[in-house]
Length: 120
Image (cartoon, rainbow, N blue to C red):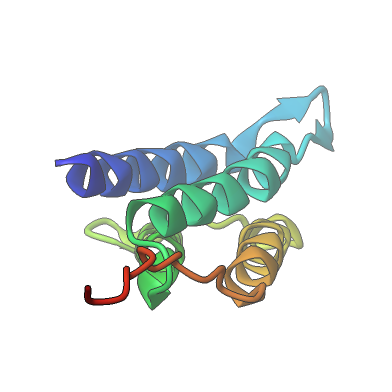
C-alpha cells in the first residue's frame, strides 16, 4: 500500500512540475518546477529505498517520474506537449534526474541479518 501511494505521489509531482513550467514573473521565466524537482525526486528515491532496503526498488519512482514528464512534456492529444520551446524543459529533466540518480547510485545499505545463536 505504501508503494502505491509513493507512485501516486510521484505521478502527481511530475504532472505539477510540468504544469509549472509556464510560470513567469512579467516576461522572465521562473523555473520553480526545476527547483521542486531537484528537491522531491531524491526524497522519492530515498522513500522507495526505505520501503525495500537492499534492492533496486529505489529506481522505480525515478523511472515513473521520467516517463510522466516525458509523455506530458512532449505529447498531448491536441498536438505538441507542455514543454516550452526553450531551456526550461531540459532544466526540469536535468534537475529531476541528476539528484535522483545520484541518490539511487549511492551504495545500498546492507540489511542487517539477525544474529544466529549456536546450537546447544
